[in-house]
Image 1 (cartoon, rainbow, N blue to C red):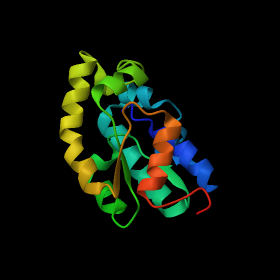
Image 2 (image 1 turned 45 degrees about the horizontal axis):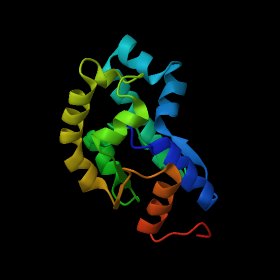
Image 3 (image 1 turned 135 degrees about the vertical axis):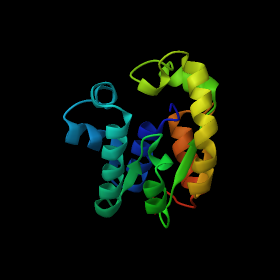
Image 4 (image 1 turned 90 degrees about the vertical axis):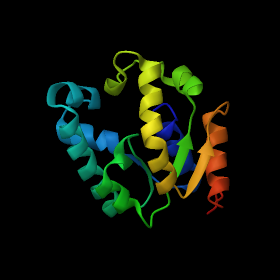
Length: 161
């Protein structure tokens, strides 16, 4: 959360002349409501089921850049589905995440003490992110444009690729 997945994904896609697809948007389309409302109205298990289906569909159908929700890879089926695909872990630290998202806006998993919740969540997710990632790109102190350039560099790609 707060790494800039959607923003950086949009920039990377544009530089490569590809389309961006965001699985959170796909979930919202299927559910007919925001991710936050799915969490509140239906619960996290329903959201995770919708997310798993959205990722599987996108991996089958979408030839461009795909932005996954931060918890998507925690599902073993999604982790398995990502094998063989290029996956970039945008590594963000709590200070930059707090600056970017405020750690409280429309983030159901951050209710209560947002900073402590974010740290707890990242502690659990980091090993999976690192295991799934083809490349890891640090985002701290970088603009979205700089992160996008670092992603392309880490993958050995250029805007002409």
